[in-house]
Length: 158
Image (cartoon, rainbow, N blue to C red; front, side, top):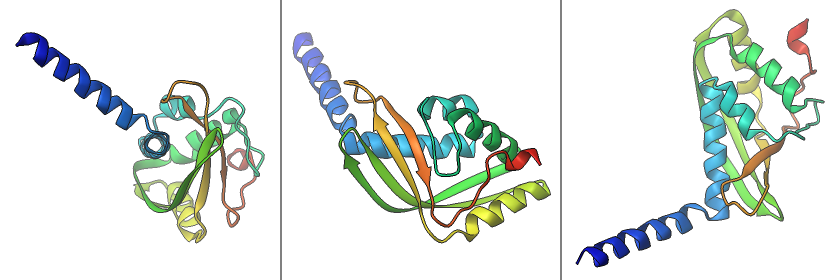
């Protein structure tokens, strides 16, 4: 009897892992984790989700993007990010998620400026993810883009 229960538990765990580790599910899960980490300003978690070779059209690298995000989003006392999903698709070696972000929160005048700027953008953001190894849970963000958003790296240094 115990062997049957143990076998059932093992089969259940294996099936749950197979379900959870499907590429599209992992892509969407990592996107949700990124959004939550940014919302909570958990920079260690955000950094772990960003690929070391990250680059974007604004000239940001992993390090400069984290630095500026920490500076600007650190102006919030409370922050909520709501995503309006537009699309997601798997690509060879990764996938993309396209969604519009809306920011709401309280903070300094700079926080209000950030919210106004992000919320004014009508086009969705495109998040490009890379599946880095044979491990189904190893995904990193390699690029973010939005054709309407103009940012100069180091903007917060002025």
